[in-house]
Amino acid sequence: MVQPGDFGPFDGRAWLNCAQQGPLPRLAVQEAQRAIAEKIAPARMAEDEFQRVPRRLKQALAHFIGARPEAIVLGNSTSYGLQKIANGLDWRDGDEALVVRGDFPASVLPWYTIERRGAKVRFIQPSGPALAAAEVEAALTPRTRVVCATWVNSFNGWTLDLEAVGRVCRRCGALLVLNAAQAIGARPFQIAGDGAEAPADAVVACGYKWLCGPYATGFAWISPRLLDQLTPDQVNWGAMQQGRTLDQMRDFELRSDLGAVALDVFCTGHFQSFAPWAAAVEYLGQFGSRAIADYDQQLVERFAAGLDSRRYSLLSPRQGDARSTLIVISHRERARNPGLHQQLAAEGVDISLREGNLRLSPHLYNTASEIDRALDLLHRLA
Image (cartoon, rainbow, N blue to C red):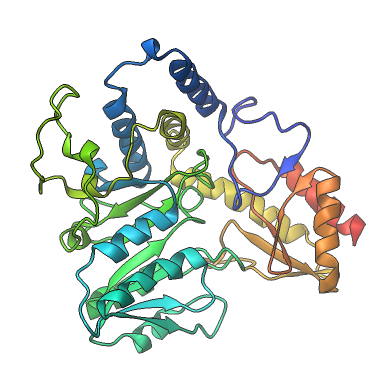
């Protein structure tokens, strides 16, 4: 899949930590270098770059997930998209948003702003490692406007049954907002047509993990059903300029025909971040999300099959649809995990320590030999 030189060099290290930070493909590095060169000597920069860069990025993201570019909101994080949705809905006294206890903070904290308008945030307590559709159905009330959940749990690697949870929310009239930061780029996901049949009403993700972009990048896909209910909580002069040249800026009319563009982060002509991210998404798009997910799962399967179960517990799913690209393990003597994390890093294998457990997250730039290297070290150090 990946050709030599497409990523890196990694200086002999095995970067098995994409859930924390994905590396830039070489094509994206070249795009970043070009953007810096243009900033050093601005005469090299065409004026239409301000509109060309975000247009290119939206097209790349839309192509990768099978959506329409006009349904894509450009942000600087996962939190940005979640906050725009929370702030943009017309909340009334007694309305509620359901969030998941123990979820990643980005999926929970943005919703607290609705309490200023008389709405409330209520928690669902999952009985297992992943939220079940039946638990969502039992928690829903006539006042539930939104259910916000994470597709792939960052702490344990378990995957939400998106189709089942989506059916429950749709049947009960609640909006499903999905934090897909640990999924998009590593799991297959395609939105058909205008997304009317999509399992979620909004899919929000960052760009610097599995989409291999720079830090401080993110996007949201918003369905027409949800977009019709959102009132932007900002006035972005750049968005108001859509379809106009930069020499026609003295028009102060507030437009209502912008759609998702009205929610974009300010300064979408962000050359040093958005241009290389567009190149990275275009690079991933040539493989397609299904092929990338299949390759990643081969690496996960190789690790799960080779792990010594006498010394280590596999805490993430061993197989099935609940398995993600995050592999969470623990030494049988759990207190040894921090030391093992440090020893692996000293040996050139980079993983994460999360809530006292060891987390590996391979992606398309990794190889079977790097998985074997990690396994050999874990077994030797144990």
